[in-house]
Image 1 (cartoon, one colour):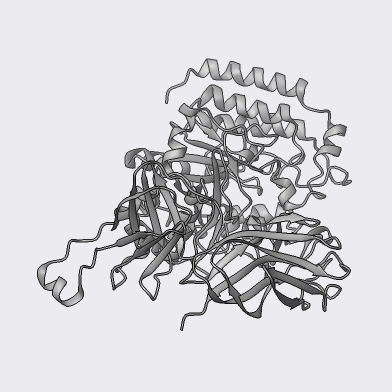
Image 2 (cartoon, one colour; image 1 turned 120 degrees about the vertical axis):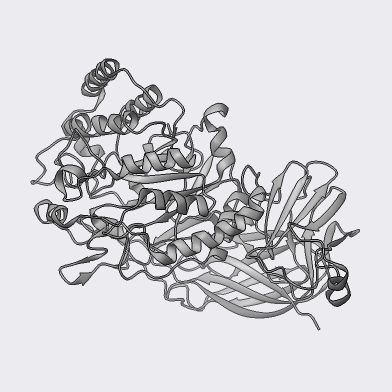
Amino acid sequence: MKHNKKKIATQLSSLLLVTSTLCMPAYAQEEATKSKQLSMDELWGESGLDKAKHANAERGAWFSQDKYSMFIHWGLFSIPAGEWKGKTYYGISEWLMSNRVADISVDEYKELTKQFNPTEFDAKAVVQLAVDAGMKNIVITAKHHEGFAMYNSKSSKYDIEDATPFKRDPLKELAEAAKDAGIGLGFYYSQMQDWYEQGGAGISWNDENQKGDFTTYFNDKVVPQVTELLTEYGDIKTVWFDTPGGMTKDQSMQLVNLVRDLQPAAMINSRIGNGVGDFSTLGDHSLSQVNHPGLWETIDTTNNSWGHAWYDNNWKSGTEIIHRLTSTVARGGNYMINIGPTGTGAVPDMAAKGLRRAGVWLKSYGDTIYGASASPWGRAQAWGDITVKENMVYLHIFDWPENGEINLSGLNNNIVSARLLNSDKPGFIDNLLNGDQGEVTFDKENNGWSRFTLPEHKPNVLVPVIAVELDGTPEVTKVSGVDPSIRTTLNSAFATCNGCKNTEIRWMQKFGDWNYANNLLNWEDGGEGVWDVDVAIAGDYFFEVEYSADDVVDFSEWKFIFGDKTMMLQALDTGERKNSKRQPKGRTLFRYRTDEVGVVNLKAGKQSIKVIPKGEVVGGGINLKAIHLTPIVE
């Protein structure tokens, strides 16, 4: 992309002038941007799905099509990899410098630049990994909260070419490799947090050591560096901002206008702040249980960490990556999964293995992901999940059923055909020995359920897919089905609540290790939670309850009502702790358990399952995450 340098300089001068006049004065910024007082999720800003304005159709077309991208967290933090002065800090290693973690001084931390020489970094190999994995785009950290630029910045000497022995620009190399491979490139930039700079919110605004102000930092570093990224690396698909904290809308809009002027086709995520992004980014590691409208993404990691952490070997398999990708697309979103290169620049082998295995699957089944629409059922199925393209419904089978049948509730269309996707037509001998390995038969039941009978043997692929052709675009009755063959989980996200609250909660077990659960909670006396369900086949079902409770709620009783039958749960203290030292601001550390309640006989058809507290509610009652029903098959 070519730009007129004089024009850019004029635009930059204008932006700086506007910044100086529109930004709040330093004393007001001190009140609005007290980063030390903000929790991590508060630093994300208004990243909720109802906040981003969403891109216009033309600019967002590729986002709706691509679905799958690579995230790369890489910086000075990859050298200590979660350890400082002999102590391991478990959590997210890229926050090691923060006063919330190891609290490393600027002078100590910048000494890492002298040993940062990542000679194993190979931009072409990284791009090839993304291609092999089936990904369509890459987003890499140009500057994380540590304040260090991973490219040749003319606005700061605290960068990889000026401050390290490496003397190369890895972003330039990555841009060239991505262009050659035909894959999109985007840059992560931490616009509010910069622990290296005075004024960059690394020091609380009311701290006596705070000598700078945000306006100066914003004008002198943020705007110039974002300008460099937008003008010196060719066409950019995504500008991925992070942690706006207390930035004003005017400040967010200055960056938006800069992107619009210099990279008009680029997409901006919701963490630009103040609801002015093109698409929404969910919380870190958040996999949604419910469908969402508009353009949005889930961001995830190949293990548990973003930056390289020496101790984190909890790698996701290719199968798990496909499950998480599929379920995100089935909810209507895009999936971006992270790798954290080491201090030498190498990609961990196990991260690459999982991604490549998923990529092999996508070569055969990518049509069920790229450009696919969300499941009209609005939820996962007991056996897997569903994506859609026009009149084609793709049943992704995560759990191959022992009885060779999968069941689908609420499909109102007629089925034209069903087949095992990408199965080879068996030969005569194969038919004699094993039967027809690709054959799928189907029946539309009078009760509104559809039953698919699968081949006898599971195909040797990570996730088999049944392609179902309908007589039109899917028309679905959205009542949660209770499957007659496999355990059904009824999440609280799909219950109604009267006299209680239905909401998602999130907590950390290690610093930055986010966990999410939708719950029925904050119960009032006589409160009632209700699931509307459709039971395919009458019979006996094993009933379990998944919940958390503290010692105050211990011994409380809860009635689960199935028509004229009542099942009783006595809640146990699950180890949930308020004001846990693992949680910031005295938040609760949640611990869930699943209790086996017993066997309940269910009638067939549409009905309600209710839960109500028995007697007076104490301590807000249990946090009810889900109930489970498993058919008892003789």
